[in-house]
Image (cartoon, rainbow, N blue to C red; front, side):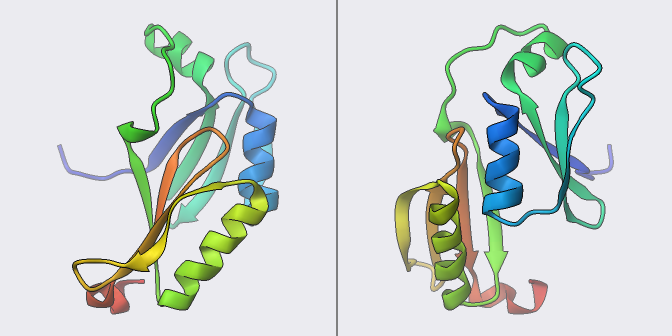
Length: 140
């Protein structure tokens, strides 16, 4: 298997609220909810970068599609990392997330490895780490 991720899907409880958080609050580009004509097909796709999309899909639809029971959500299952080009940009993204309705879990701070990062939790409890890594300055 050649490692190539094209879609990261996160389960949400209210698709409309999740769309508003990501599109209207954070400014991510999304066309809106598609697939509503299918019983478990409503989804939102957000283009993150060429070849990579974030999908917002109701948790009950993921359960139906996989055959797994929907259990309680847990924020410690996964984090999404968003690398930026400066400490100031970390602070700006964190502020934008709060304005959109996110909760700050760990305020932005200098890290032990020489970077700067903080965590926020979106309206469905997913953790986002906003990071400036001085070793990756040319990669952002």
